[in-house]
Length: 105
Image (tube, rainbow, N blue to C red; front, side, top):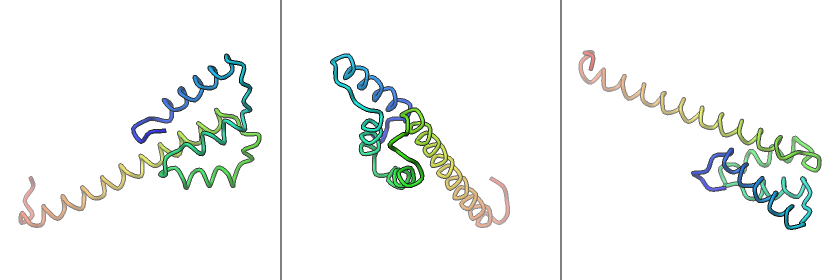
């Protein structure tokens, strides 16, 4: 998975690859695909990969379930980034407001 790629795009790519393998007669188990997906994630997902491996039985996990977990993680990660940015902006705005002598922008 590339850094600029969404989990949905990555999911489509993995499913296309699995379908091509199946069409060529290659039988790959869901467990093996889950392992390969977890291994191919970028470093920013390492904490989530560890959590998934420890909290779930990946031998019985379905790809849809895995991508659902990854999508939830990405959304919460993005929400945290937006919250941090908003907090920093508010802090900057208040500092600027005080420097301006209490007058608005």
